[in-house]
Image 1 (cartoon, rainbow, N blue to C red):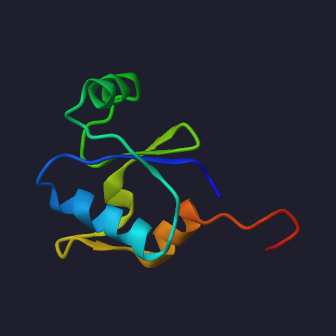
Image 2: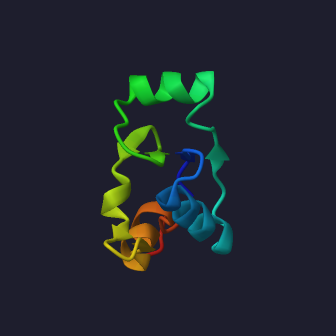
Image 3: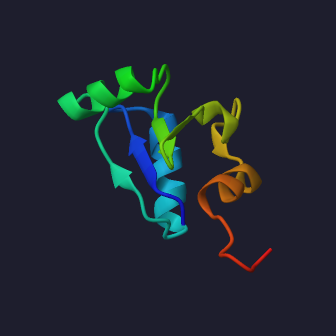
Length: 91
């Protein structure tokens, strides 16, 4: 599994949707609140411009690449491709 870090903003609908997807699919992740000092430092370091901030194996991911607008639904195929990588030898 890739290393996933989520930086949710308080009261953000997109953040709730992404966190809910990860929890529902038992995908391990680290949560760092965007408003915290650590969250602000990471947002600046990775130039995160929208919430939630998403880092996968140290790469910033645009949350809009994972959400179907305007319903704000998680695109299951895009999320699975990003968060669930096959084990070596599997395809």
